[in-house]
Amino acid sequence: MKIDRLISIIMVLLNYERVSAIKLAKMFEVSPRTIYRDIETISLAGIPIVTHNGVNGGISIMQEYKIDKKLFTVSDISTLLMGLASVSTTLSNKEIIGTLEKVKSLLPKEQFRDIELKSNQITVDLTTWMGNKSFQPNLEKIKKALSDSKYLLFEYYGVNREKDKRCIEPYKLVLKERNWYLQGYCTLREDFRVFKLSRISNLEILESTFVPREFQAKPLDGSGWIDKRLITTKLLVDWSLREQMVERCGEENIEPYGNDKFIVDFPFVEDDFGYNILMGFGDKCECLAPENVRIELINRIKKLLHVYGN
Image (cartoon, rainbow, N blue to C red; front, side, top):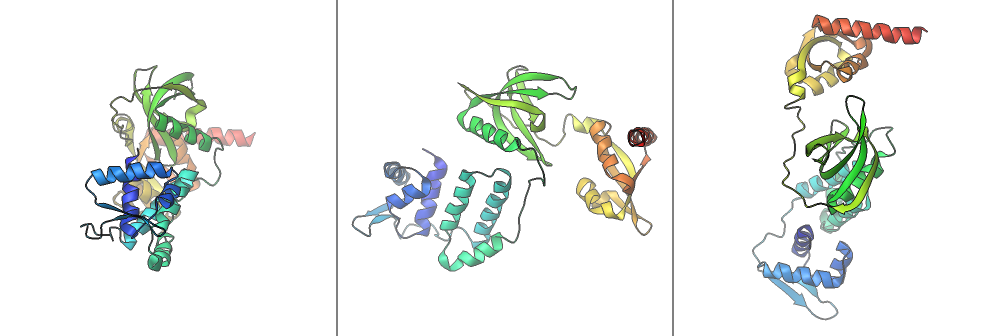
């Protein structure tokens, strides 16, 4: 029995005067017998359920029951639809599409157009223009393993470029700064670890299941590892990069310099990834300090020039 289905049934009954068990069964993709069991559970929880026999019969909540049937405002439902639509761009599957349609089916007819208009005013699309075609299948495998508490087996490239096999208990999937991360218990390291999906290959779900252990999600804010390596660089950047700098550094770390440039205090980790970020800004950015970072950038630019010079 799913608690989310019970809550959804209550919401349907609060929005409609009377709904048949068959209609509820179709809406939630279960059998009428399951719906009747759910209705019994809802009734035992203290919510007064009324059943009506006959051609126009169905299930309803007693009219005098003290719950405001306008539990969701137009703004609330618009926000729900925007959130679901945003998730569907990244985890597009039948479940989310079905959920979108179910939420839409709850809308009062007289407010449908207004809510649909508001929900379409903002779109959050987290997908890339061109991406790895294997990501979506891997995401679906991970979601299934999370749902069924099954082990995941895969090959993983570490930061040292070495590849080893990992078997983990998956616990959480996280999308952060356009990268997917999987948090789980690694049987090799006998500890909780975070795995970047772009470093995972040959992913498969094992038949064996595990008993979920106590899990506390690791904050992906760099605490404990990135923050210890962070230094501040001073950059001279062109106006065209201002938006990117505001997103990465915050308005308070940007100062005007002349008519079309800015001085930026930029957080930086001195590794390949960090240098690639700075070099990605091209000729619109110059590193002023510290001196060792500036020198390393010059050396990397010379190597790049040598590659293209040949």
